[in-house]
Length: 123
Length: 179
Image (cartoon, rainbow over all chains, first blue to last red; front, side):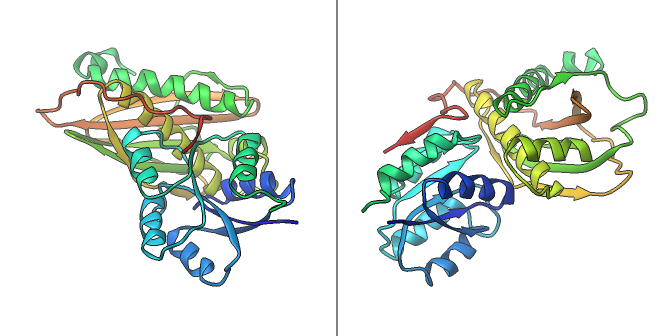
């Protein structure tokens, strides 16, 4: 069994880091470069089990994307992966339904453990 | 950095000190050897500078820019350290500038200087020059095995700028929270 995960980050370097970390245990990883790109791709990928999302991005940032996903009634769990650690931002994301917050640079094992909890491969 | 500038800008001195610390910590997190080094003989950046990333920031009574100036070898070394196979220099230097300013933001929050960040803008090319900032500005220089890095922090303070009572501390780089 596998599960599909989307990584949303305007940095290719980060997208590739996340993809490499999650592909190893068996996740299928899709990439988006910002919130706008993510919404377009999510509309075509109905089986998304987890979203890993940056906060500061051009066009549509991660908090704005959470608002949009909420408005759409999305139930896909979202984990924020960002350089930001400001409590107000974390509380805002949590109030919008985010399930986790990881500060870059991240440890791959943290990300894999988080994915395993929120989107188990055997489910 | 002339000491006279710091004498008249204690906040910039504080920011600059934190920037030095977070730069060393950031590269250590990737197991990249780094040390401070002396400034280039010429004004501004070294002649082998190939990438520059800048990120604007703003706080109450404060605004400025962080600039990273890196050589090709620096971008390649950092990409490799981050597990990347192909080096998009603009992307790598932009992301490292983002992580550096993100860490600095956390430190400044603890000091009662909350700031918000823009997204990075990066330029790539030979013989890049940078203009002299009109306000307070501070360069620091670092080197690793075969590469060099310059950071410039520009800050403009309004006359009514005041540090806030320190709010709740931010979570630190590498930390993870599950709600």
